[in-house]
Image 1 (cartoon, rainbow, N blue to C red):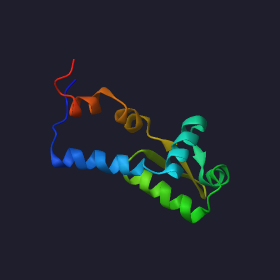
Image 2: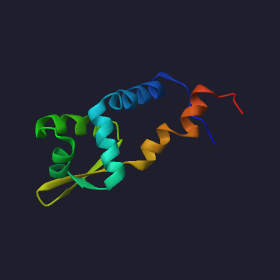
Image 3: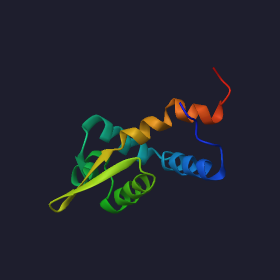
Amino acid sequence: MTCPTIDNETLSVYEQKFKALSDKSRLKIIFELNQRGKVCVCDLTELLGLPQSKLSYHLKLLLDVNLITMERIGKWNYYELNEKEIKGLLSEQLCCIFYPNSK
């Protein structure tokens, strides 16, 4: 596996992803998407007990760092985990950055 370089750009990318994960509401969104797959925003408001405006704010933060994806179907937006990105945060790739000489 080729490890990414530890430059400021790489660190900034991870900083933004971890900032997006540093909120209970966003962690709940990720949990629900993991459990249910693709979910309509209308269902997420009910599942999470959040008003639409607050939910939209949290979804935008997760979208901005590519941890979730959105698809518009008719008049509704459906959200889904970006599994590649989520797994990347828990992967050898991230460990490789912080422990480059570990075996």
